[in-house]
Length: 451
Image (cartoon, rainbow, N blue to C red):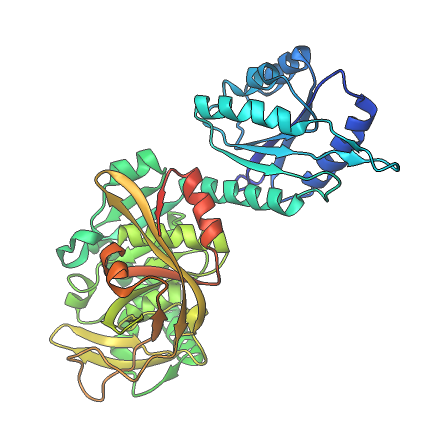
């Protein structure tokens, strides 16, 4: 059975029937065999050298659910032929791959003229509105398998993002405008669906778990975390029940991301959700604070592209070329440097409970935020570096104040330009440089990248 999360790929080897077919067939078979080893569902490999071939291929694939065409130009090609196949698949991206010629023993370059075929096809692809990427090999060059595999991965990522499901327990915490979202537009333009649950659903789930399961989970939490002060059973039981409820909802509804209303939500029940969210977040389930829907979209995209966990941070203080970023008590395990440390802490009347006070890893990061600008979806996207932060606390926490996960984010934009462009108080980050890969996926999803 096909892996439904992988891209369904059709290989089209296109050329000209008057050129030596024995030579072209050797190239075609070699490349097809290598692509078949890549991480995709290869639906078929077809050769188009004339219009009769095109008619047969069009008939063979007319009912296929294709995610990507790889149009491998092995020589000059008459555009009419390939367009007979592609004209009914205008929403499917095309990887335009030109194979270079070869030099014989005498030093003479033999040019099958794939460049001519490609430059004849690209204007038509533009006119028809195809999304495409060009790979053009030089004569005698090794085949560009790594670039092909990267684009297949990008198409697979876009496919997975379109099928993603988000669960929100509440809406736009504190009524903050950057946390609002347009459910219909998001589903229509990107494909992501958001389910919204009332708080009482989660409260009922929290109360439904049997005592033995709750106690077992509490023991697991105590054994896998390091407490900086006394963690009482009562707040730990509450946050444990929330963790189990959110996990049950995420698993049961096959969610890719979940968030709960915090400041104007869970904290009204006498505890904060930070530890529960920290335990739940990983590369397969994105979790975020304050019901930040578009933050979760960002997280899904970054995690899907990188294969790694992503995390939310928000802005606290600014310096000449850096920003103190952190979160008041929430961070995924994969972002922790050293022990998973927790602490009982309190801010004001409601924000009480157990906070994650682990040290945040530092290093090269990709970060950004998905947002909507006058009806158009965009992605603010940056590369940067995080470094150790000064000792700090969020103003107002009771002494001894908690040291929250944080870092100094070194900017690659002037500070004022950064502040003008960043589309919200939250940004999402992953470790490593994935800017170009994220841009590729955003292009496939019709998301404009703002750098």
